[in-house]
Image 1: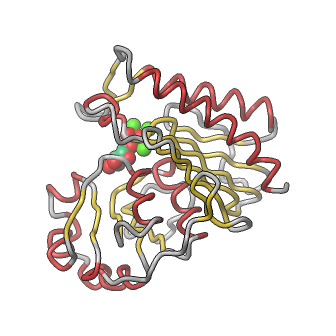
Image 2: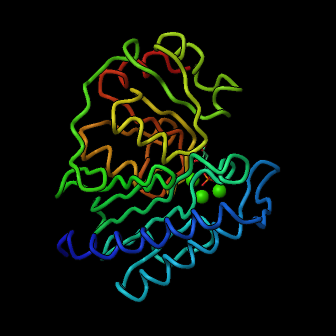
Image 3: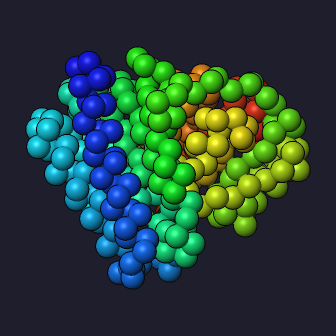
Amino acid sequence: MHWKQINEHVQVWLREVSRQLLLGRKQELQVATKSERTDLVTNIDKQVEKYLVAKIRATFPTSKILGEEGTKDKDLASSQGLLWIIDPLDGTMNYVKQRDCFASMIAVYENGHEKLGYILDVTAQKLYWGGPECGVFCNDERLPKVADLSLAQGLIDVSGRMLMNNYHNVCKMAQTSMGIRVYGSAGISFIHVLTGKTVAYFSHLHPWDYAAGKILAHAQGLSVKGIDDSKFDMLSSDDVLVATKNAEEDILKLLG
Ligand code: IPD
Ligand code: CA
Ligand code: CA
Ligand code: CA
């Protein structure tokens, strides 16, 4: 399928997602916990996933879908047709506590190949989107390629959990870099690497956390690597490193 046939729909859906997320953050949220005390889900996470799944099923009925909030079609690994991986609200803790710094993400694969990725930075009203066939855009403007800086020349971004446990020796990586940042939204962190604000982002991630960012990063000439799982594919959870090629080389040497 031509990428434009998919893109014209997704861009419209994401405008509605943006509206729902902005409206939701002004309201009292229904917040529940999932796997542990700090793993939150709100009525808005579920509402946005329901909206997107309904739109995908109505528009591209033979699609397979994986969504963070419970959507999981059978035979996801079968490589025929369109596969959608969605994170309706990325940075739920930020959404609940700060009402800022959150995203919505959609990844589209076709016949097992990366097709299109979308990361919507809702409060900035910026949609980062694109893929191998069209390049990467921020709203209507093509994103310039980022400089291939080393770790020592830039900022590194890691998850709070990795930092608190010095997992994989991230403290040494931070000391080698120009400084460390923690944002609480994988989508926002991917955007920072895509735009050259950081040279690397390192976090334990599930497919919906990295799928869109991975497609965009590849189209930007950046490297995305699963550290622990040798079979890292579109459906694995792993410690994921996205970085410039130079920073990746530096980080892999420091990996503990
Ligand atoms: C989380 C955020 C966070 C990352 C977690 C993710 P969610 O996504 O992206 O930054 O450290 O690993 O689970 O649950 O808010 O969609
Ligand atoms: Ca979550
Ligand atoms: Ca997420
Ligand atoms: Ca989420």
